[in-house]
Image (cartoon, rainbow, N blue to C red; front, side, top):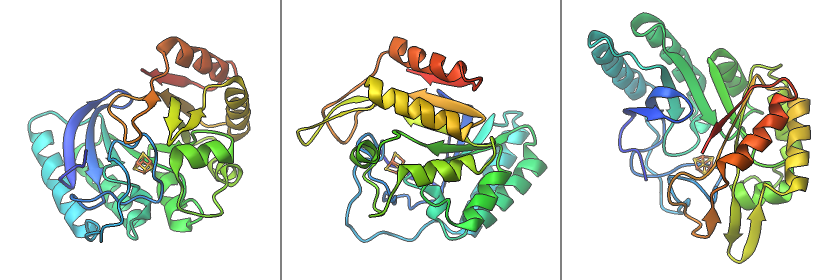
Length: 255
Ligand code: SF4
């Protein structure tokens, strides 16, 4: 499923409320430096990619939609950067966030600004500055083990390291939100399961070191590009969430 517009929705999000989406990626192609087995946009392709939506296009489309929603008295709860891939790879990401915060303040001041990111661009100072300014800086961390993260997320960076990503998330000093997909199944005949006791123990320990403001855990909701994946039950997610809450960190469950 691809979002065919720069601004999409509003949609009612399981985790965020009434959410107006912002898609910085092309309307006809997924552009991401991960290739998650559960990605709702499908697998990455090697097709030539159309250009990303420009800063001007995003600001203009967002102004128009927020103006319309404010006039109808229906401002969104949240403006969410998600869409057809990883928003932080956009070269103007920081400027787009600044534009968005200004438009939010002007037109829908009660709306929060959220970014859903795979946390791979945190080495870029401009990305870190932008994420530090938004209300909800939501960063993916699906496993504490490189081997599982490689299987679940298919990172394109040959030196991808979960430990390094965790250190970068921790450096937001309790401002970041960690988001984790729990699932089990098989990918090309290889078992994948980030709910085993070893997986959950290591992940809880990593979250304890990161000390995020909040954790969001969820499971599969729609068809996945890897066909042999299975949902985790709400009871299992709630048991995992209880371990995070025991650390004094709020944890929401979507199942
Ligand atoms: S990081 Fe997000 S957009 Fe990229 S492949 Fe994973 S789920 Fe899809």
